[in-house]
Length: 436
Ligand SMILES: Cc1cc2nc3c(=O)[nH]c(=O)nc-3n(C[C@H](O)[C@H](O)[C@H](O)COP(=O)(O)OP(=O)(O)OC[C@H]3O[C@@H](n4cnc5c(N)ncnc54)[C@H](O)[C@@H]3O)c2cc1C
Picture 1 (cartoon, protein in one colour):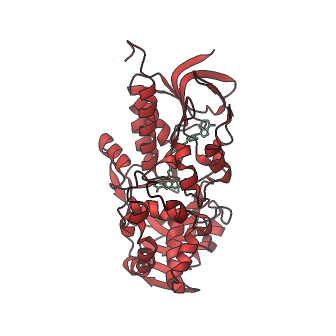
Picture 2 (cartoon, rainbow, N blue to C red; picture 1 turned 180 degrees about the horizontal axis):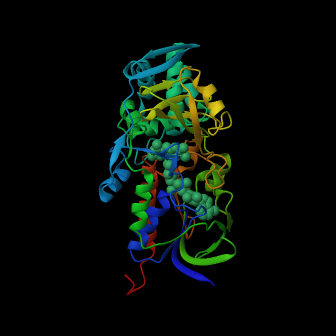
Picture 3 (cartoon, rainbow, N blue to C red; picture 1 turned 90 degrees about the vertical axis):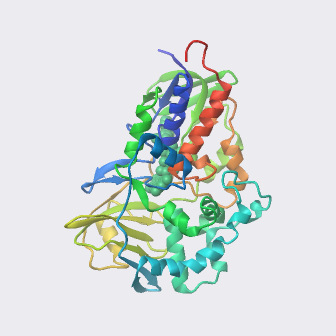
């Protein structure tokens, strides 16, 4: 049977869910088509290693305005992991141990110098392209900017490892402007940026957020419904999905991640400004691993260097006889998060006393419905593509964290973008009289 909707939203990640909530509550018949058997996309709370673990997006903060509005709206409880009691880092091959504050003091001069011009280049993170000279700065990768600082080996390792934790890719591939945008979002404070991106999380998992938005929508959310093709003209679009079903809509909102956009069969084809960044890919291609170790273990943080398979590790849950650690590395091809032996070898860089009991993760890079972790741009992609990626193509609109202004790559960015695009779609489509 051929079906019809006012709007079809492709993807039930946070951006798609927010878009669908706003449109359906404005009286528009809204259908969400989601390829996976679950909503949430790159947020995914799953019970593993005896805990509810965030396999994807986790941390949030009150300086992230859109996610915090949802926290307030749905009364979601926020918590944090244990405070680190000791911190390990590497000076060459030597392991150093101190407090987290010692480590922060070590990276402070590098961070301060690297980021001192943040507000000059991005005075308004909500409009990241306002300064004309930004395209010059956008040529540089983070590695070359760090190299210019001429740091000692200790400081250099430590700064690089901290950035891998943030940027989730080899630093040579990551645009320097990623660091500027994150820090501009915290008004130039690298310490606040650090806290905003890695400390506080939802007490009952991001699944609570996903459930709250899903319960608050009047949209028809269809799971296990991968979109196969979209044919569009200036009157609307026809979408085929799952096994041969079709639906037509006056507008379509596409929320698939940047890296897989070019794989969608869209006729007529999308403009180059959208396809090129998708083919080029994001710079992020790292790994997130969860590790259960035998306890007791004191809460700790550890930083190695970007060249180790795991650059950052820390305790996220402490039990009586075990602890669960979360770890990040720059390159998902260098370590298998599900392989306890490989994880054990990676941890030995700092500590030989930890006994790995189990390890788990998800290969987001191999996942056909993401093929990326969180958006980190390559040099030039911000100034070349950002505006084109946000723009509508006829009746097709584009939402997603990858296209956000203030916190791109974050859950906050998914909400910002979904909210904006829902407003734009609504402005062009008044509900039929008598249907509100
Ligand atoms: C390991 C990891 C750690 C992260 N850590 C954090 C963090 O600590 N804090 C933070 O704020 N953010 C973090 N993020 C980023 C954050 O999770 C994402 O930026 C955000 O969730 C993206 O939301 P989205 O809706 O834009 O995209 P997605 O969540 O990717 O949603 C897109 C949806 O489209 C669906 N889809 C794809 N193709 C099709 C198709 N053909 N047909 C139908 N549906 C399709 C997908 O299945 C998916 O559900 C992390 C991400 C990862 C992967």
